[in-house]
Length: 449
Image (tube, rainbow, N blue to C red; front, side, top):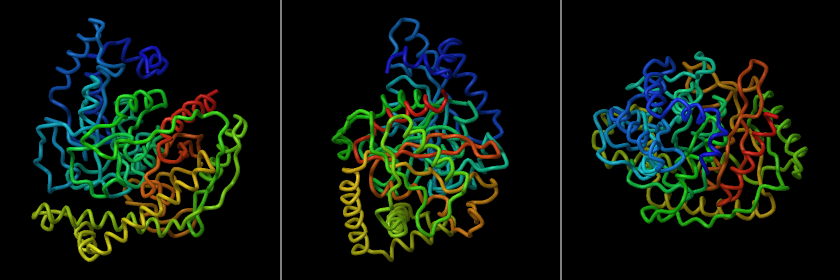
């Protein structure tokens, strides 16, 4: 991506016009003053980094188009010199001395990490609250949640504090907050963005680093410096499929049997399908090809096993972690070695099934979330379309993608009656991340035309 391309983004154009130092200083000030509680730590060396970036730009030697751009990272990632609490009492005083791999790539591109954004404890819930940093609110309506677990990042971008940043996605944690806050977020294929040297990955490769941004141009710029193999992550030797996003075969699933969906969200999904058809794509409704509840159980088992491993690694876990997470650790211990191997085999078989299915369909269109943003005091909506739902009822469209290991892009696609954004997601076969990005760019332009 060239500096000229980035100049097409209003957010980046404003930064370049007023200067890197001013942009970073203003971002830091907004982070301190913002009432949404998006940030839990700020970078004490941010202004020094900004001045160095400004000097490089003045000399005509920027490290990348992102040199000097203020960004943020989610508080389940390690950034040298900034507290990394993971939203948990267990890590209250932990300040890493080195960046984990994705953060190192961001800094190597010259981006200025102004701080860490809030996340629920262990990034394991679909809203953003923890006992250390409190509750994060949706800047579009502070009475509502931004979702989770990358809710702090979504709020920071939607509030205009930073134009982009790094979240993570283990079950929809970039895509649902992006939908609730009217921004864009990518859940990449396993291996597309390498990861190493961070916290214990609770869900192993079901969780990936998820770039988030205010628009597709910025998301593309962020992905351009994050993607690519690294020897520290053996899964990053990804065979990419760069076929262009021309006339595509697009399937549509707007609900799973037994799982309610907000009518406004279903209507927005149908409108998206019509737009895609008008753009020249072949669009058709398709039936779900798997049992979404069974696949969700696999993700739950992996999370429980991850908590058991976390408890074994950190003896203070059982004293400091909330009871709900201790219960998950106990479930993981009961799962045992045989249960874990069976879970992993089932995941492998599901990934094979998805590979076969996506040989006949280029893109799957789905809602990004089944419910609109709910009151911030609640951990989840207890009803959707007048039907009772459980803690993951709103998340039915996202978690299966993580089990599959395939890419999904969440982006806004209109508004509901109360003026809040509706997010849809484009999903593709493994390795077709760049095709999804290209489709997202074209669709965003068509939507705004």
